[in-house]
Amino acid sequence: MRWAMREWIRGAAVRHVIVFFAIGLAGVFVCVTGVNLPEMVASHFDAAGAANGFTPRATYLGTMLLLVTLLPIALGLAGRVVAVLPTRFVNLPNAEFWLAPERKAATLRSLSAFLVVPSLLTCALICFVHALTVRANALQPAHLSTPAITAALGASLVATLIWLFMLWRRFTRLD
Image 1 (cartoon, rainbow, N blue to C red):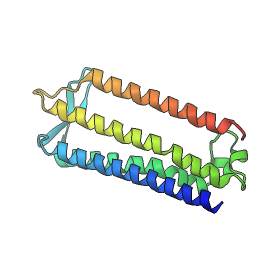
Image 2: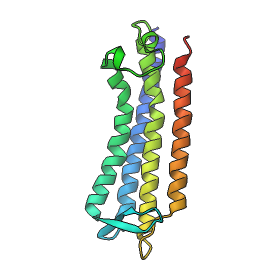
Image 3: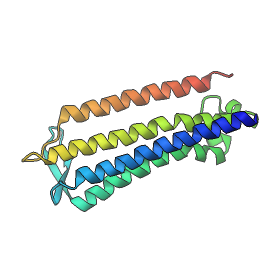
Image 4: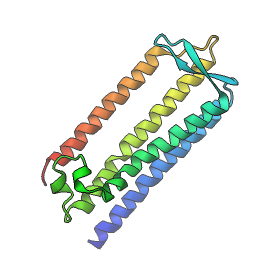
């Protein structure tokens, strides 16, 4: 039992290091790529990709930094929130079974591990949208690549559905 706990702590530590490293890297990416943006950044685009909303560069970069850091952290911390919620508020297949006292610790470890994936996917999607925005602002007039943003959102949706299926599969089995 003691060995298993040490392995879990090491695994959790590695997951935290990976997530925080990725978030830090994403923050650096936003700062480094954002320095060459114009004073007024085209930050909103219509369905055809034409710019129709502008934001001061500092506001845009601050917003992107908050999104690329706080959103993935919030997703990652969701597993800790589940630990303090009453079972009736946890939307998990067979929640009573998985959150029974004898299985609760292992279930929370599993949920924490599962939540690394949406944290990293969200971080990657925000970085990609930022990169597309930087590229769009390099054009005159500013124009967002509609196929690229559509592909990114489609890939994000597919990845989310796969992740949800895996999560559902993990917790519908009673073993």
